[in-house]
Structures are given as C-alpha cells and as structure tokens.
Picture 1 (cartoon, rainbow, N blue to C red):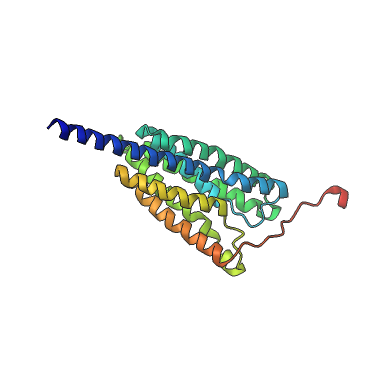
Picture 2 (cartoon, rainbow, N blue to C red):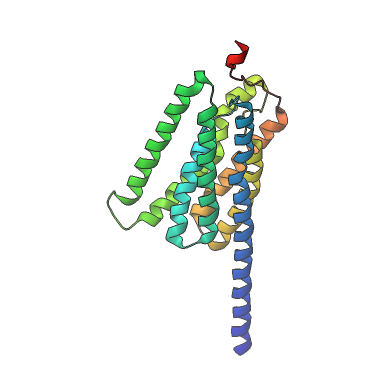
Length: 236
C-alpha cells in the first residue's frame, strides 16, 4: 500500500510538472505571437503608410487579450495573464501606429472599425459582469475568450478575397500567423491536459485557421506592394 501511494504521488507530481512545462512553452510562444505585430508596426511607421494591411486582426487581438486576461485573473493562472497583458500593450501600440499612418482615403473606414471594436468590447464586458444571473462571470469570460480567440485567428481571412483576386498574400500578417500556429499547438495540448474546453476548442480551431492562412501564403507568395508615401511640401 505504501509503495502504491508513493507511486501515485510520483505520477501526480510528474503530470503536474508536464502540465507546467507545456504551459510555460505555450506562454512563451504566445508572447512571441503577441509581439510579432511590432515588426509590422515598424514597417508601417517607416513607410508612413499601412499599404495592404488591415487593422481588423489587431482589433481582434486587443479584445481577445483583454478578456483572456480577465479569465486568467479569475483562474489565478499567470500562464494566461502574463502573455495576454503583453498582448494588450502590443495591440494598442500597433493600433496607434496604424491610425497615425493610415492613408487618407482609408481614415474614415479605419476610425469606424475602431469605434465598432470599442463598442463590442463594452457590450461584452457588460454581459460578463452586469447582466443577471450574477456570479457566473468566470464561465462567461471563458466563453468570450474562446469566441474571441476564434475571431482573432480567423480575422486575417477578412482579406481572403483580396489575396485570391490579387494572387498576393501581402495583406496576411505572416509573422503573426506563424507564431499563432506554434502557440495554438501547445495551448491545445495544455487545454487537453487540464481538461479546459474553453482553452482547447478555440485553439484547435485557431490552428486550423492558421494552417489555412499558411496554405494561402504558399499558394500565393507575398509580393511587394508599393506604399503611397505622403508628398512633402518641398516637392510641391
């Protein structure tokens, strides 16, 4: 009996270590995923134009990270809180860079997208905390996190018609897609290991969307897009 109890303790300890290791890798990859837009933000800032890029993936990322941070706080799980807090900061920085450099003919559309994103966030936050029955915020936040994760990973597909029509994947945020593929693999493993369907299901779907985008990038290789630079007064 003593050895059986000792063996059970060893197995439990090993499983806990394995779960922690998977969570660590998943968290590190998620930090990589959420910092990948910095490269795109730098490109936009240098060119002083947004070119073929869309703001939608970064709006989806901001909402996703915000609600996952709240869910992680309710669980007391730093593996969820830390990378998503970083994601909020990077998404806001990227959105600010995007807004400051967007072409004039797209300014109204981008402003409308930002307003819609903010309104969606306010409505979802109200539903999570203020709508009866009360006391179920953790379940609601998990559901919102799952739905928003799916939206985030699918959001680059908003330009799928443009990709297919132009036979050019320049509008897809490839660094973000690659890191998303790696991150969703390990979050799927972590969700399965701890039996959390709110983590497992959206990451399996996210992996599917990421692989689809990589497939599109393979079929339609990225070609350079000439970005319109603002004309300076000196050239007039």
